Length: 297
Image (tube, rainbow, N blue to C red):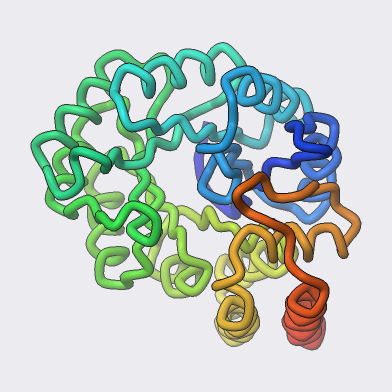
């Protein structure tokens, strides 16, 4: 299976405090209508660290059931210990994931390249499904060194990365790794989708593809058709939206999804829904971005 294209880092719906698999399936149906190419369940936007084992398995099975065979399913499997990550990988394989996204462990190993190397190579030697690395310094306060990424890319079971550093220089360096090895680069920052794609990245995995999947798919298509004026305008709309609501996090993503007719549920404690004033502001920013998108259609 080829891993490329636009991939929402899916929210996990919580209804009355419980993970809601039927709501997840309803959301997947709407994202499919928008034309996305694959799905990431249990990324950072999926509140993966708040899920219990049974909820993880129930949600992933529901997602697999709703996703057609021509679209891929990635499962976030990262944990602080190598042992728990391996357990998550086994569950993900059993429940239908095509590949896994594994975030860097950092509680005891932040900045320790040797520990990161041991972790990922041990996973690669024992995983039942392929692995994509995941570096997201906004949450981990640590970025995998590009030299270590290049080294890990030599292992046949480490097939790519989601780079959420927001650093264009790192993206360029990893596109070179993609060109030289069996390796796939997904840009994680919504603000770098356009430059990453035109330089050769395989795709974009981002939280904002939850709320404006049409814009990301249109951007993808515009780049492939070399309509770079349109692609740049779409990127501008996405970046302006991010500038207005990016700091509001998952509660804003879920508020906009609810406004759009999705079933995102509420954030899980200690996160909380937006207050009404902030919710109104977030939805207004989404409307403005969609207006720019429609002008270019």
